[in-house]
Length: 224
Image (cartoon, rainbow, N blue to C red; front, top):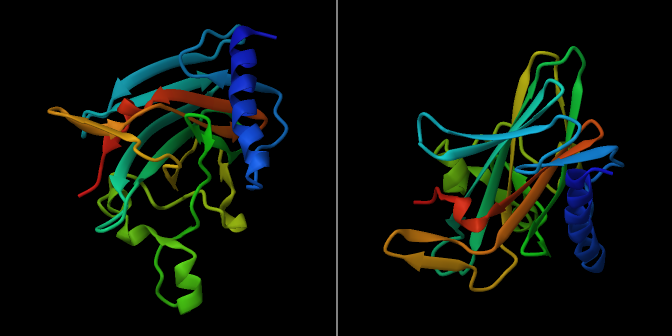
């Protein structure tokens, strides 16, 4: 087993173990291999980064065998009178192959704490009062309502939104939002505030996990 694959499996094991402890659902499929951003890989996966020409923020890319996975992350405050932060992740999958690709959420953790996608809906209009208490409205999350992240496709605890398909020679962007599971997770200075710790998140493309392990300071503040 290559060094990157071993590291990736260890990373995902760290995600899966606390997942079992907290009785949270898992979104992983059985995988044949895994690639970690920034790690050398004997199978030819390459890591790179680029700056978004519009925002100037860093986009992280993992590419292999005609599949390119690009990710970035941001955060915003939950709201007035409430403590904590919302962490937002968006991933674009470019399919340069001749076959359909299936995409699913493979797991996310923050400093070893599981961070499952929140139950989200585009809008709460039409929902009962009871239903409204159990979901988050994307239209009221500034990172999404401002257009910083795409809300067209998103992972949620809603089972109907877990698997996406990318057509041959096509592309798809999928996002999700989670609540930071830690207390006192922010660090501030004259340069601004950012989450501390290490973020680990991954998507499964067909049977391969594309894993991003990034410092919290890589997150961009996209709140009001």
